Image 1 (tube, rainbow, N blue to C red):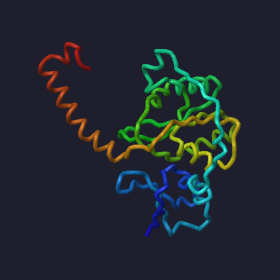
Image 2: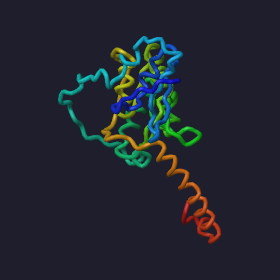
Image 3: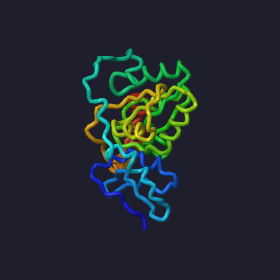
Image 4: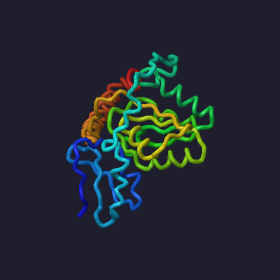
Length: 223
């Protein structure tokens, strides 16, 4: 039987999942819907790499000094496609102009939130806008590392826990890595978000049918 890692501090960052050489760790939603690492005891070789890369077990305070602060906002065209000041889009556009790549949270085909690397600026829209829910890291840490080792410039964006998870997984600093996180007070549960979507979609279909029958939709008053 799999052995569940029991710790209230776990953020589901995915560092342990990414580092495991035997693929013995799986991130599975717990009862509240948050991703949580589960270890398969039959695959585990007790290498302890998962504990070594866990940012909760190895808290890095090197960034605790008072940093410089700047107030920044993009132009109106970019901000209309963003959730706040549009700084992410400005950073990402710069990275692409330097021949780099960008990793961030996006919706997949099933409506779930997951991290992915985009390789062209035309796909930047997938990562724009805040998602307000925990995203699944998947194999993006490994993908980012491969790009960094090949000398590519990479911008990684996510929650502070995910940035800490990536840096712990990498194990060293890379001059060609730029990370950007956000002020986070905890993420909502993906389970709650999926329930919200399940309740919202039928309502939206009903409203669209109602407006269509009253010719409001055709009049262009609602889209």
